[in-house]
Amino acid sequence: MTHVPRYVLGISAYYHDSAVALLRDGGILAAAQEERFTRKKGDATFPESAVRYCLAEAGITVNDLAAVGFYDKPLLKFERIMETYLSVAPRGFAQFRMAGPMWMKEKLFLDRELRRGLDFDGEILYAEHHESHAASAFFPSPFEEAAIRTMDGVGEWATASYGVGKGNEIELLKELSWPDSLGLLYSAFTYYTGFKVNSGEYKVMGLAPYGEPKYVDVIYDKLVDVREDGSFRLNQEYFNYLTGLTMTNGAFDKLFGGKARVPESPLTQREMDLARSVQVVCEEIMLRMARTVQRETGMENLCLAGGVALNCVGNGRLLREGPFRRLWIQPAAGDAGGALGVAQLIWHRHLGQPRDVTPHKDQMRGAYLGPSFSPETIEGFLRATGASYQRLDRAQLLERVADLLADEKVVGWFDGRMEFGPRALGARSILGDPRSPRMQAQMNIKIKFREGFRPFAPSVRRERVADYFEMDCESPYMLLVARVKKERQIPMTDAQQRLWGIQQLNVVRSDIPAVTHIDYSARVQTVSRDTNPNYYDLIAAFERRTGCAVLVNTSFNVRGEPIVCTPADAYQCFMRTHIDYLVLGPFLLDKTAQPKWEEKQEWQREFQLD
Image 1 (tube, helix red, strand yellow):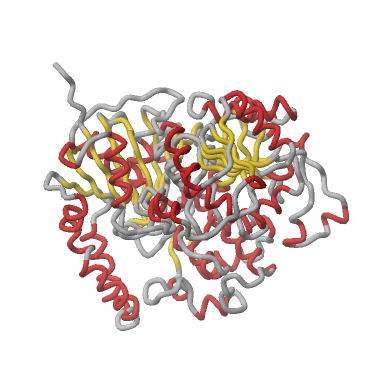
Image 2: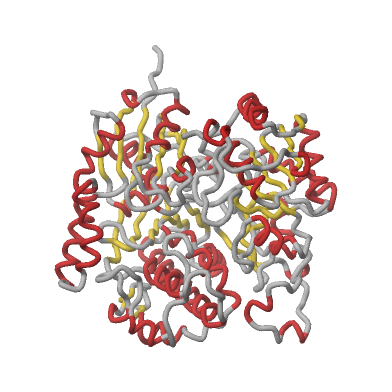
């Protein structure tokens, strides 16, 4: 008898970072964020394009879906919002006036909106926000059983939770509730230091090593009362997110000696010290919570999700100093991953399906779950643009690109299926030589058009990671920070040690300076041949040329734009920046050989996915 596959679709939408995930017989078939198709960073609208992609990847229509899931419960969230408004009235009127129409238009009538957007009359199920996070953390993990911890801004009422996963079941045991939120504490400092909430938190984390933790005591004394078990209370006298349209208020300004930094204005030592201070507090709370979770559950393994799980510096400390033997972190740990979590909850809990676990191997397929493009499609695009290109066989291409990288050229690398989650992992990446002391500044300013202080990540072959960094475990999703090995570090001179703040940026600290942050740390990606053979073999080819088994890897985009999705996105980014060469599948493009770039050409409309 012919087997008929069963499909489950999960959706996250309407708050930030809309996304879709599709399961086939429980396996993850496809997943993507809407922003990659619409080119609107953090796009929160109904993920029409991502739905269309996932269904096309499976070769099905909505009528083939066994069920659709939504990643949180909007009526519970509306209850929390209304209770908050009423508790602070009339001070919250400005916020209510902005949010009310959105709820009346779509969020209160979500079932109608989902059915309309999908043209679907089948079963639609809803999970609680932190259950979706927890499911996305545990079900794809390589563990038969594990503790689970979720932390973010807020879901319906919960801001953090912990529980256990065993086999095909998860159970959340305790939660921390609104308005006490580690995610919102961190976002308050993101706002105050002049960065954008829900996307600038990475910048705060990258800025932290330039500062001193001079405000830690003030944070503990005035802002957050932390208990030994990691639970805490925030002093709402200093925050504005309950009643206004900003994260902080005048009392916060007074506490830290002035108004919030104006976005894009020069960074001062104050912002660096604030970033360092909130990072220290965040890490301490993460560690205390982890100890409590281990004590309460008795588990050896820990699975993490929620936006705070993207704090890779804190994750690195959990791995080194925490009570768990092993960690696994969902690569799409933010709200996008909730789409995957609710789909898996439906499959395992609602449909009662078993869970297959492969020890030491997760089910995320390297997070390469987005669109790919055939050589024929790519070449059709290149011809339409009038681009100059060479087609090379695989071995020639890898050797040629390795030579270019060894010559300090910057290469856009577009290969295979796009990554799911916020990190580029060798499918939509910009690559460089980590040995070059000029590479960080060159890539930040000339290519990414972003702040010069921001660090770049190293990609290293899995079996060589312990030769470069103080870690010897998998880190395939760039979610763990480790120190560069002592023997590779270059000690600072007395004069260099007297430098302060951003002056420290250009000091060469190791034999891989382009990926060594100012505190000798690096956000490590380990690359395995079974998940990305082309990228793995490129690093191997570079090592044969140079003796170095590491590449600089940053996301293929410029500041303020999503990571590229299509060949057209990649070519446009290539031509608008100082990237020297572009790889599109089997094709190699030299910037100097390309026709003159003009905005708004016909092919730019024709060759977008959406």
